Image 1 (cartoon, rainbow, N blue to C red):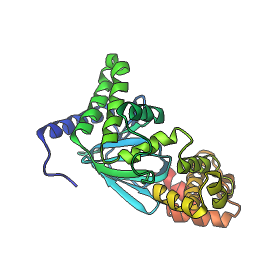
Image 2: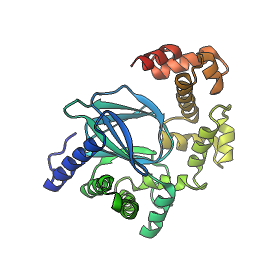
Image 3: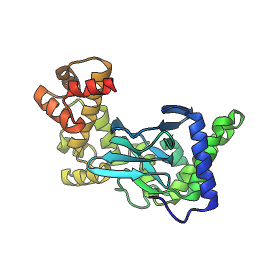
Length: 302
């Protein structure tokens, strides 16, 4: 939703960000503009694109997008940013875009080691604040954060300044995030880099062995929590239960296999851990809206 109290500086920064991303990505698609920085453009709304997220900051210059996590729907636009603090099975769809006003955005990957370093220098303790904040959320985009994002994008056209200034601007962006409304959430990124956070460890465990049978009781024991406490904290942070989380990871990988390896549905289901072809087909249709082979045909035709 557009704000009414937008300063002249913010208007100018947003107009420049639109121009610079548009120049860097002249056609629909994406480009890795700088180390850790990806720019996106779409001149039409899109269907939900399923993927596994990574810790990142998403700032939009133009358009609007919705990200689905479990049963939660998160909308963001040029006046709001999205922060993702973990590897999560998500689905994103561009909902506002046109040839005259394409969707334009930037995604900055957040390195856990850098986040930890900035936290230490800023005197921010890992244990401060909530430890069970959901690992994905949207917040209003403040003027200073927009300014720092724009200065990072400017470096695309300044190759002689990139090596010196890009790391400094990235640290500034992290600092401003830590001081803002999503500071608690950003602390999850630092925890992901180590082994102290129990839910982060569980997320890594499921992601690395998604094709293996999952015992929630055993996983809770591995991370030192009771089953009920583990289930509650996991759902609070990821928006879904451990079993639902694993299922979405499995189905996304199965879709990738069907598209890239030319497998039949039963083989793809078996590769990601399903023992029943009918169960796999039912879950696949529930997530993607069509049976496996029909879904793949539709994707290839478009």
